[in-house]
Image 1 (cartoon, one colour):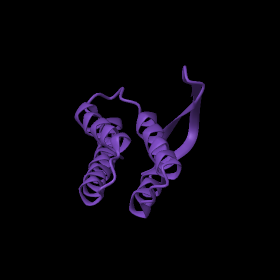
Image 2 (cartoon, one colour; image 1 turned 135 degrees about the horizontal axis):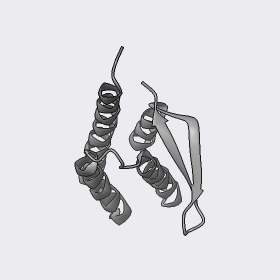
Image 3 (cartoon, one colour; image 1 turned 60 degrees about the vertical axis):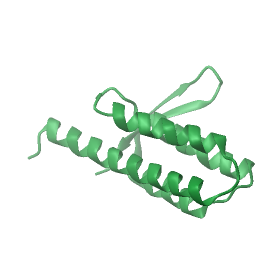
Image 4 (cartoon, one colour; image 1 turned 180 degrees about the vertical axis):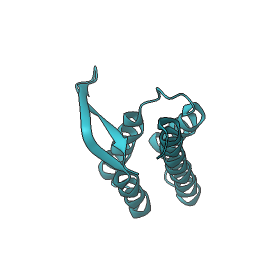
Length: 119
């Protein structure tokens, strides 16, 4: 039987891996595209910060999903289609479960969902 600590370590490891992979994919996208994508650079920097801060157990997973949702929306609104990024977003979300979802509203009126990792 695994301890609560071991499960937490596995969850953090899965999320850190997902953040790292997405950061690399965003870096590749920025290097290969001549279009100026300021929102994508900001998003990449946020993911790097999330990765550094993820040692804190209180760092919410919902921030990552919220930013992934924003990324998908920005890709669609800007008519910049990167199937690779959209597919990776789906892969990350497939590792997450909406079991016991906590829903709250941000000051902007957007709904924030808290997900738990499926292992």
